[in-house]
Length: 396
Image (cartoon, rainbow, N blue to C red; front, side, top):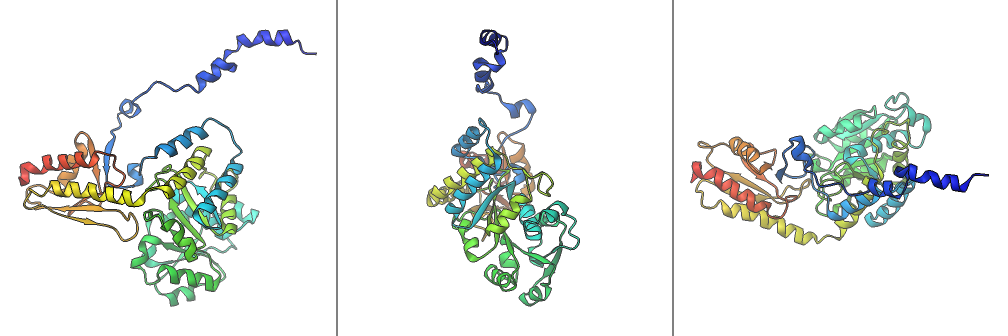
């Protein structure tokens, strides 16, 4: 029988396993300026939710959920299941899963359309020999991110008209891909695209990664009938930049889950989503649905108008507020001036190199494009001041 006294006498000898060690392990570290230590400059975001600029900042509620999740162990699939159930209710669709961003959703969603729940097919892709391995897409809907779809071993079949699409469908057709931002540029628009998929029994997948706001889009496309829809989590929903949503038909979402982590022999094994991202993304959706979206819009308009008004004294400067039709559907300020004295590229460089550093829209070439949607309070005033300081010696 174990000697209880001898056991208790050993406890002080291993303080790392006792209460002192536990409290130290979870104690808040002293504040450090990590970016400064590493020589990495922060900046004011007047560009938008671009991945290369680390998109948006998580809200306090999302950060709280992340920190909460970091302090406990859970069974990952149990958490996936619980969050999926709640999100399906909130987003009014059959099923949802948290993915490693919208690009990760494109991989596992495409894989689901190829393999279903067949274990052999799941293990084999991207070798799709003998499987359905063709994805139909409009020529105007080809884009850089469709590499995530090609990663599954498919071949794109490009079409332009509805007639061409119907002729392209055959026993090898696995899926029909739709890039939401390209809707105005294509000949087959969203509702007709869905109807053609339903008519021929082919799953339709809509990449709407950057397409909230408006908030209604979170439910619009599944209600329209798309079998799969993806949104980025780290853009205007302000969830983790490395998370996203895949939503739609339950059988396809179930198959997508089988094609990724924590299952090992899958094409999506490296696209893992941890407990912190799952819980934080859940809270991001919950919080986003509750936001005062009208107030957010008014503030965005106020910011760009403030910057525009601050430039009125420059005679050659003209400003216009534009809202993209679909993706990044928020107010953007477009600024033009006589570039014979200072070019847009020179202003972009001066903004970037200044203190604080300011990043503007990457499309700023013939005009300066400013999007303050994810900027912080007070940033619009700083941007306006810096622009006046830069332009005055040349245009004043």
